[in-house]
Length: 252
Image (cartoon, rainbow, N blue to C red; front, side):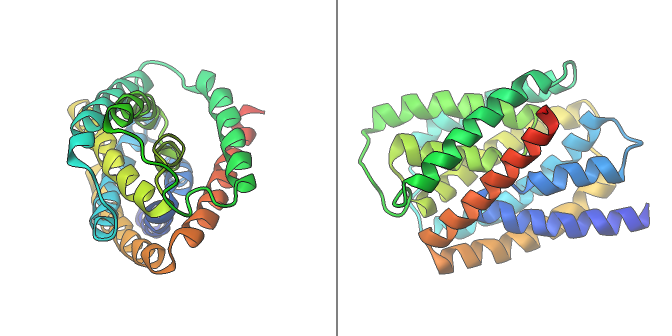
């Protein structure tokens, strides 16, 4: 148990680093905890990862908010939608399998990766001004859907949020990352509440993992803000590619 705890804490540090830049920290954190602690139910292990994910995202959100604007009016609508979607997803993972949704996610990720790669200026600058009403409609829709995915499966949620803020609202990568992290906080908090209520969190793992995740998030967010949009775009493509490989392996 002690060796496994050290390993998962190291993994959580790197997960926090990755997640703070482009999302996708769960790509390494989730498989690692499932592999290291097979004696526990999957729902319990997924619930345990939500606490380090929340803590790291909270720290990264604070760092990014210093350089990017977060519209409180927009988030009055987006946060409840993401919160509700995440709670529903977390409930579903306790009663049904998630395999049916993975092929759809894989297809969407491939399309998004190709589009991002071909459109070199995507996310480099703010590309358009979208009126608040349209932002709210789009945000509530993708907030609920991605929130559901986060509560049910998890890995890559931050990347999905970043994509939506860039595609539908014209944000650059720094602004998209900042706003995505704010929404990610809501989905993580919602899932934590449900997993805690159903006794599906192992706190002796979650707390040290959270401390390490915050350390990685601090370094990652500092580096991302220092290097700017181009660096985040490249890192984002790497994370999305890794997500595609993972889901392709699971689907096929």
